[in-house]
Length: 378
Image (tube, rainbow, N blue to C red; front, side, top):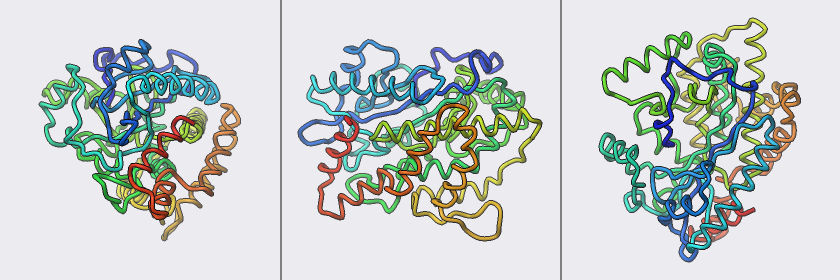
């Protein structure tokens, strides 16, 4: 929910094609926690001011900090930049007695105890949304991939929609909320979807249809601009990208980069097919929505509705098929290493699996947050 509205371009003046196609950028929202008790702690304004880099930004709550890489041709370059940004934020936060941790939710700190960041956008959102906004203390990761034309971006989004639950399952990192295990692998997904204009995006026949819909909402006063669309995936007129927003934040940089590389390969895969003349049918949102829920509930352990036959398929099997399908495209954008890392995740499990494993072995929730901070420091 970044504060980009100050720089938002009109929806009819998008910047698709303004740079090399399939460049990738990573945004991640990380927690600031007290280094003694590991509860969420305010401090983002001090951290951002001390760093003085537009790639490090405040977020909705003062316990959140956002890191955003520059557009990069390869995920290896994005990884190098992200590691440097994390190192700087971690060092500056430590000067204020804070640590930095990555996960979709904080295991035990309460949302209503967190202070709002005093920016105009966030004050306006708090006044408009009330309770849903104040409980929305969760942490996501967004991946941008540049696309040459706006209509192509909408077609890529429609084609990728059935793959989003697989990406969610891989990213699951939020099994605790308000001091309790929730029975979910991605509690963040369930918390965030109480906001308006969240979840799966509607069907848009083309970019003109999308632009007309946004302008209608603007004329009615429902939203200021396109940055108030918080769907799991959306076209981004300012950056000229498709943006995947369904992911939980990650503690390990390698996992963030693996997810970004897979998404870059996926966008290239469907973009290449579009350029070859293929047009994609509207995704079955009933099935995709059910698989989205199953991925949030069970993560990599989910049995998903099979998109091709009457029955179910394991999330792990579906992801293995996905890796095979996009291997050629991963090679084309130098992301094969990312796919190899995804294969490691399939075997070793997600952050949610690691957190739950620590709890089963008797770790306190504070100790789990400490382990997330250790992984985030790398």
